[in-house]
Length: 129
Image (cartoon, rainbow, N blue to C red):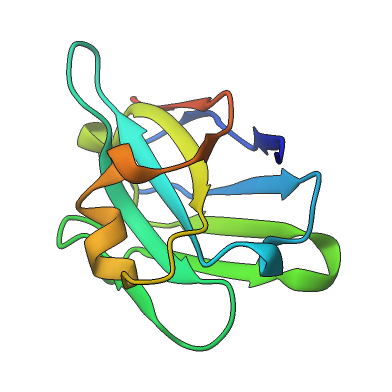
């Protein structure tokens, strides 16, 4: 079992930036995929960006391509989500999650968040003037 802890959320004006962090209690290399997801009130969680814990396989939702950049630091057991050019519609609770399923890629994982094995507690992002 792994504990995931997100941080870095907050209130930012439209066009601004935030950097979310997610640290894990165990090495991410023990899992196949890690992802960032978000949830709007009353809605299901949706994939924002997912990546393999090793290699270059990565996926971004169309709504964040060119604005968000995910990265990882395996030595620190951490992943990050750099969010630039934020829009009011990016307001949501953001979660990191991981799965050890090995037969799927980042795109499948991001579009099927329910297969996540472990979730963090989430961090609120508010984009408002």
